[in-house]
View 1 (cartoon, rainbow, N blue to C red):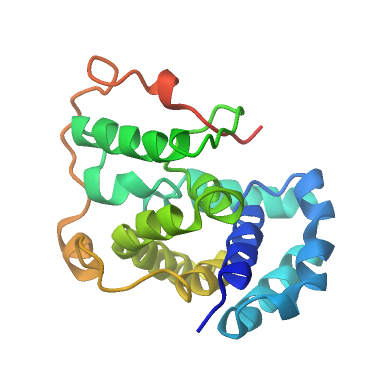
View 2 (cartoon, rainbow, N blue to C red):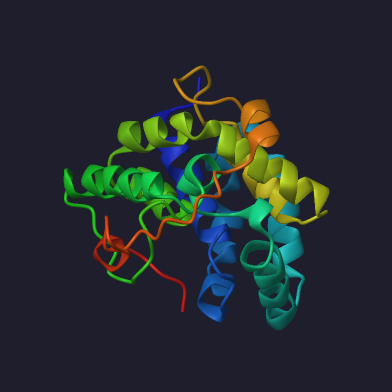
Length: 208
């Protein structure tokens, strides 16, 4: 059984590795490499492969790949509520739940990102409420499985990070199955979120 400490460290590593690879992020890669032995055994292999790729890739090339995969391909979305809610009013309500979970333990990230941004959720688990974060991830496991499948299909090295993360995400929790989401896709009703939930009020983290 994976210890809470090892799980927190894995969530912290995945949060870093799924963030935009600017120079500050790349400079912290050796920290992940130096602490691989402290991570769950099943996650080490995928993370070694990814760290080797990112450490050996030009920063500009890594940034171009990140933008191409995560910003231009909806199937590789890093916003958890998108898989189930798409761009509908239901997503706005789901985002409120994320923010309330953070506020309940005084967790804040003042960089302007939406609360369902995966690196934010992972940091919440690493330094905030681990059980609450694992609950969020477990209820959104189907979306994470679809993300991993998409990254693998795109032959992106980021598939290894998603694979490592899935080793600690709870299974069997209430929520849709990956096959169901894959068959239906996210809802497409474009209702406009602002009249219901001002998205600017939900920002908690960001990529510059």
